[in-house]
Image 1: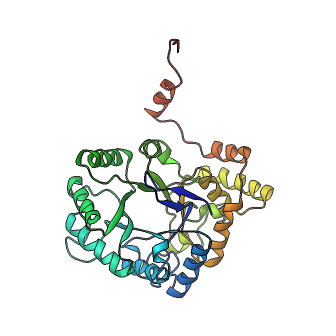
Image 2 (image 1 turned 180 degrees about the horizontal axis):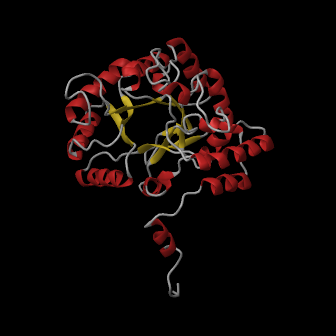
Length: 339
């Protein structure tokens, strides 16, 4: 296993994290319906392989995911990092949703109770809440940190300007800085390279990647026409999520298949290797032990520079303003200097 530092902390995370959105026998998210027994096996396998970060959210299966994860890690809780999220609706009350101090106060305690974990290592806003002043949200997070219920704060699905505003407020108020951003990123969605990823690098946050296989599309499980079939995420849901450009996929997948034959690796392993070579923390959202074992095999896959260039060229973003102007201006001055 490879490890990277989380943000500007002294804490290290495995390059792979295990996501638990598939945990929960009701399968209300149409992802898998992983039972407690199955989760125990996968969590133990991940832990033995060196994974020390486990990601969940209070809204996954209405809290069942947190409960199952807590049961699975009870024998080694002190050796792992638990990441969970808050924002989504949990309950029918008018205030059972969002990033108010009240909802966060209640939600954090309920998450800890479900997981029997004592504290939350990484507590993440599960998206921006335009209905609540960000000052109130940050006050709520800082209160949880001061109480010892949360150690590190993070965000998910934020725009770059939202993260910048948040970090600026944290500095101004002397609050804890936000260490992570959990975002969708893959060969089929490189949108964060425009604004989000540059800010993450500038502020020395860590990127946690969700859906690195883009809902299974990058695993090669769909036919060449990308038709959802029963038993797959898209087939069971009736649509693809996250959305993607089918034209790009039609060129990307054959290229990945060529590389797969060249280096004897699965398509999933190629997609994951492309990400971990960028030193991002990649969340594995597996449905069974076979998928977990295949994903872990990506650690032994080494894409060479030609492979990476081939994949990058197919999936490259079109320059947008002001990005292309910033790049142009960064190439150098229009005068010479004497050092």
